[in-house]
Length: 199
Image 1: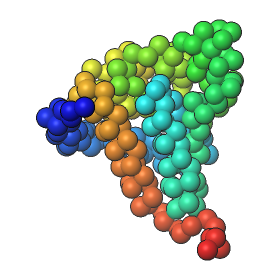
Image 2 (image 1 turned 30 degrees about the horizontal axis):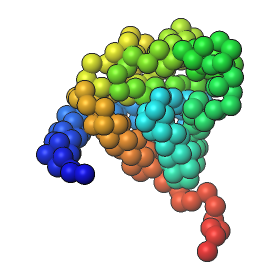
Image 3 (image 1 turned 45 degrees about the horizontal axis):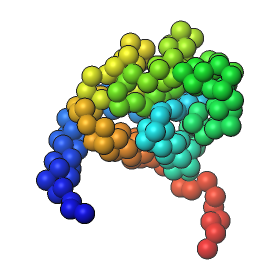
């Protein structure tokens, strides 16, 4: 088996370029949205499909444990994708395209916000969830690719990655998660919640 080292290097180069092209103002908006949730006690609900679902779960881990351990008012975050049993039940009975929206309809409250991650911006289940959230008056943050897709129509805060390569998009979306981690743990650092960590 031969390796396509040229294609692999092109992907790395495209990732670096796309990181450098990120809209800093949009990143700050996203960070401020999360910080506001820490003040109000609202929950950030994250979601995506495939690799984006993994990034959504990674986001909730970093927000809940990582950022939360450094702030007097932790930011609460949960991933719709982690509710796999419930999601499969909704999908089986009412269709996969509404499985995320149906969960949000039961779970979200007025102080909450949602974060949708999609390379294409056109995944029907994520778009339907975003539409529901905006119709309810909730903030909707999105991480998408160059074209934005249908998700853009429902976004309160939009961070686009200037690429159409799915692996590059997923690389940079995870970089954004870690940018948020660094930005939010820097504020109000108080030390770990547990004063007696395990040895």
